[in-house]
Image (cartoon, rainbow, N blue to C red; front, side, top):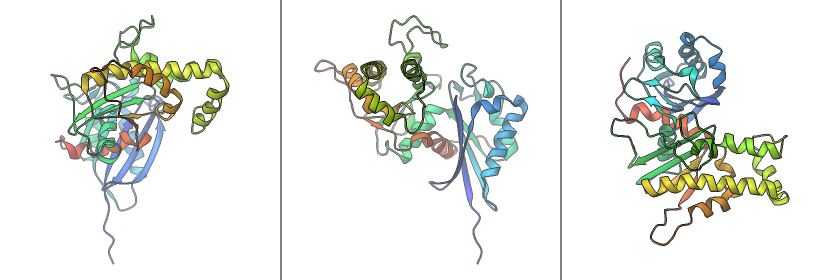
Length: 311
């Protein structure tokens, strides 16, 4: 009996903290690996595409073949040149022809987009956004990623760019973000900012699977921790209020490591979203069902969803 060789799609989600690589057989994830993004910065730029290829090939089961590769990358991605333009949080993959190098090395179609877009595509096709007419996805992680899908198609600016809607003014805070804004939403509402605020109060706080349970106990016992979480919910809600008003989604999906803490800052979020009659926003806000896998899953199907340049 002959076993049919697997034809697999690969997806890579390159974030400021970690780079996740997955292989898909149809819609089933069969292998994955997460590598610290900082590791690639230790390599010369000419070797970084090869390093990604080696990671993919290491995951490929014996006898299988790769049919395509999709990439989601943090920060601005030029969809015309296929170049990542993010020296601020993803310098190790910015301003060199990563996609064309991968296309040449793998000899398969390769597509790239913003990481917020591919995460939203993953959630739309496989997770909480199924059957949505207009889905908004907000990722609260190292930074803030935002994407809107209208009937499954990413919302773009007039020149085809992805709007960096994590960078909107929400405060008079004097700190200026790397994007140039004072009081920028990303600077105030990312998980990174929440973690820094909490560690001033809880120096030994470890960020991981136990964070929710640890913070739940502390919110109940320590008023200052409860205040930090409430204030965080308010600042998350300020940005959401603007985006919900402008985009009018039928569902908003929250993802990222701070999204899992939503019950602990729900009071602040609710307060920020409260508006007068006639001005209410759609408060159907839910958790991602795919978690950290959303970006890589969406990236893996990206070449299938749109035409890509052939190797």
